[in-house]
Length: 82
Image 1 (spheres, rainbow, N blue to C red):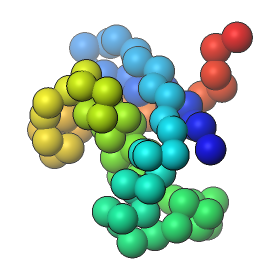
Image 2 (image 1 turned 135 degrees about the vertical axis):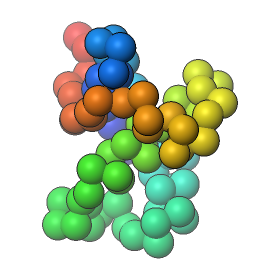
Image 3 (image 1 turned 30 degrees about the vertical axis):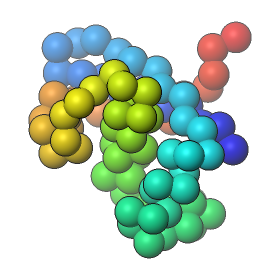
Image 4 (image 1 turned 90 degrees about the vertical axis):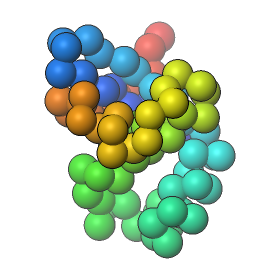
């Protein structure tokens, strides 16, 4: 159930985040959408929200989602580092 996302911030830095089941459960509760449907109905907001939730859960950001996303250039799926 783990997933990895690469976030690129406006300041040029990158951050790879690794999500766990708790992030997926929170996603489903927040969006009322099964993660199984992401292949069909995925929005960039979904990926950004998941990345933000991982960082919030781990204490790496205290910002609200709206404030945090103001500093993000993009997000994409990534392979876990070997």
